[in-house]
Image (cartoon, rainbow, N blue to C red; front, side, top):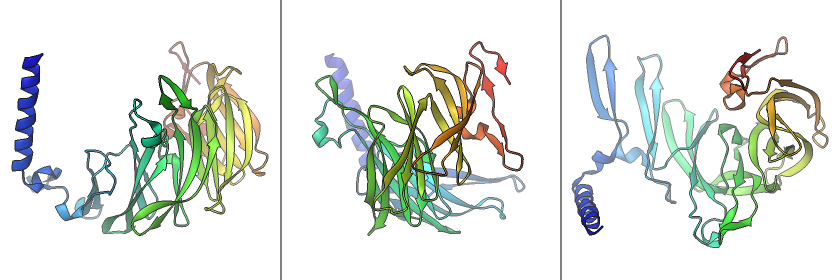
Length: 334
């Protein structure tokens, strides 16, 4: 054991010396640009030091680099920027790119001093100019987003749906999980909270999210599937307009039009045991009274569409929905 400690200390000293001796450029990512016609290659840093943004809040040891490429000029790099952060979820709107980085919480620590049940750091890059990208602001929200559909930019604000995990204390959960929708606005380089609704699906977690205009649709699940309709017309006062509880859950929501949603997920018993792929058609014309107007269960297995929206084909002209499914015995089902 003592030999291991000596080796660990020696490695620590060697690492510190290497860090102290390295110049700033050594920490920048590098890239290779190849010209197949000329048969040449250029090796260069992917981003300059002055184009690296450092958030005020520690966001991990990674560096996310965003390259802007000229598609009409053999993929020439016209701009590059970076943020000192890890990237778990990336969402892009026509004018912005958001990078969401969950910040871990030590379960042995005091939740009162560790951000409760976890927080996510959010960074915004301005991509509105075609040849230049700039890190504009950073902020934080409670909980963790599921995927890119959990974020939506609308009228200058960012809506983000997250789930707080249970806060653990003395080997047991001090508080049950809950989900929420938070609205962030930009102010002096910071993404600040301008509105929030929480308490969605207590004891459950988010399985799917979709924002459509001034509404947000959130599905949580443990034993049954509550579909929540959130009114975001006033970003400072989000409110829940309606709720629909049905067996199973939707892990992907696809908007058909302003009054109809398709949900793809799993049917389940009242106790939450999954039974097979389920496709639901929801009428959300009345946000206070969402209804499931049709449902089809396909086999006893699962569909890739439940976890990857690229596996979904919806053809509006004919109302045709196509998705792959796999049966539990390994045979493909139609």
